Image (cartoon, rainbow, N blue to C red; front, side):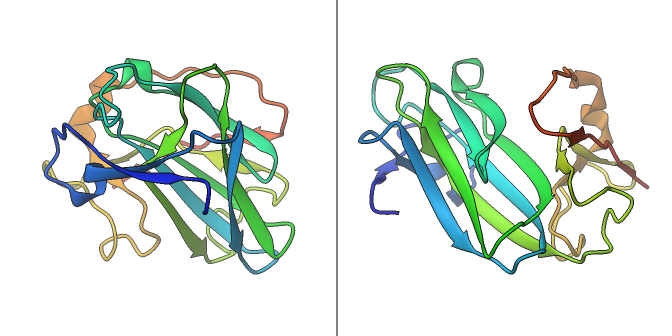
Length: 189
């Protein structure tokens, strides 16, 4: 993406290399990643954010996230300035391209992204969900592990399963969205 500027994170509470850099978008109100996909694919898209005071302003931004011109979520980093925040969506593609966009919603609040991951899923995964619906993840929880996050290769679809002891801190908020929405919470056993 030519519009973004790579930045190093000043403070990282994590040992993960993923949280040590990001891409900030200061030039346009809307910046999109356009990615080639196969039409009709079921995609898992994971967008991750870690502010870490990369700009030295100690003023985490709020901005919107879209996929294929559909509102996905508002990323409010002011609530999570030193926390790694991730959003996942699973949806069918309607064309040979998919777009993931970061949209500036407040002046002087610069959208950024730490990581963007896409996985093509088998069409039979979540086959009970109509292809006109998107799934928006709250969290995956594993009751079969201790304190380790489980992902690929232990999960063939690279979903991130968090230890079940974190269930106590979940705060679920539902709101109407302009697109038909199917929300599914799965407890892996």
